[in-house]
Length: 273
Image 1: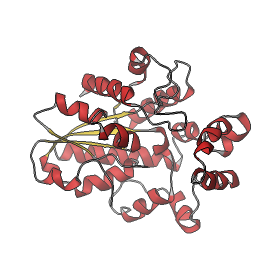
Image 2: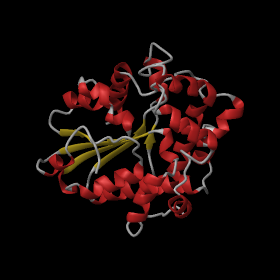
Image 3: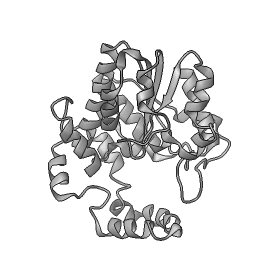
């Protein structure tokens, strides 16, 4: 069961559907409530389509594969997949889906066997993360303190911040192979059903500077994904050119994009859709 901004079943009752899949950046709880998220903005441009925001919290490509299984695909005209950097992580939640879909997908990450057995993943595999998980539910101020701690050289690795780039760039890692094969599965499904597919990612809007290291990681990943015949559009330069601020996150403790960032994302998407 997924909590989305639009009812998944609605897309089965109408023709010419435009489905948007992504994580909480796409779900955009606050901006969507104001109809200022990028999906609602796109609805004004694609008035001949029924545009549905099926973004989900903590979503990743394996979840999008699962959602796609439930939809009436001959009635889908366009499919937009919006990635985010933590899609690369293998979690207990993800691995449960990998196990369920094992006979359908192209690649089953072997790491999921131990993750499911031990119920330990990158979100709780160190003592500092367990402490962090506890305080995050108790103290709002902790989220602000954590951001400072997580970016220090010593604690960065313990918080998992230094491993994301390795997972994206290690072409032999379970994480890399899982994400590209999931995207390949989505691509092949779209081609089979004559659906126009677009894949991109939502940039880190809390550090919109040219020297941001994660921007280079995305660029390299996009190049490597081409070996799997995957075309992933890169919005980074568009954001750098069109953002008036270097931080367009919702607040100091919430790194989700504010509604102004959603407007820039919608403007970028209009150039590639």
